Each structure stands twice: as C-alpha cells, then as structure tokens.
Image (cartoon, rainbow, N blue to C red; front, side, top):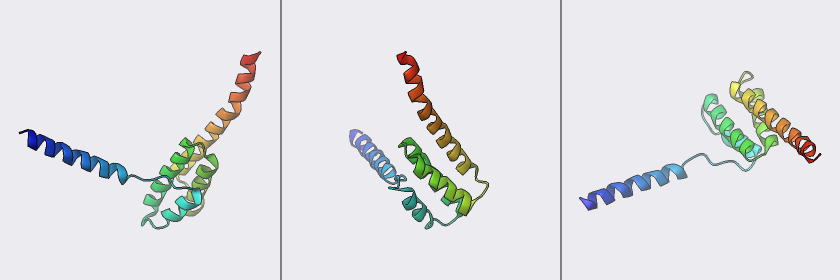
Length: 110
C-alpha cells in the first residue's frame, strides 16, 4: 500500500513539474514577444499570448515593452482589441501612480 502511494505521489510530482516547466516564459523584449507571436496560428491565440507577455512586462515595471505590445495588437491584429486597450489602461494607471508617489512623499515630509 505504501509503494502505491509513493508511486502515485511521484507521478503527480512529475506531472506538476512538467506543467510548470511548460508554462509561457516571459520574452526578453517586446520585439521578441511579437516575433514569437507570428509563429502562432490564429490571431486570437496571438493576441492571448501577447496580452500575457504584456502583463508580464507590466509586472516587471517595463511599461514601454507592454505599450509596444498593445500597440502592435491594435495596429496589426485587432484594432478593437479589449485586451490591448486594457493593457494600455493598466500602463497609464501604473505610470500615473508612480508620478503621484514622489509628490505624496514630499507632502509627508512637511
């Protein structure tokens, strides 16, 4: 009974590691992400991949790369893409928050 449990546990662990390793890796640049997206079959899949990449760039604080990806989606794949519009909105909000933060810190200092 213990052997079966250990084997099942080992299988789940192996499958989990494989799935984690197969996840989408963040591209090194927006250009790299855009080039990789061109190898994806449908425009919907391309948009999903690029939106995921843009979110990774936003999380890393690379708003320029995220913006470039969103603009590529709008200009080359779908001019009405909600995903791209949401990316641009998130970038705008993050940049606005960063610009506001220093003034808040100055006010607290007085």
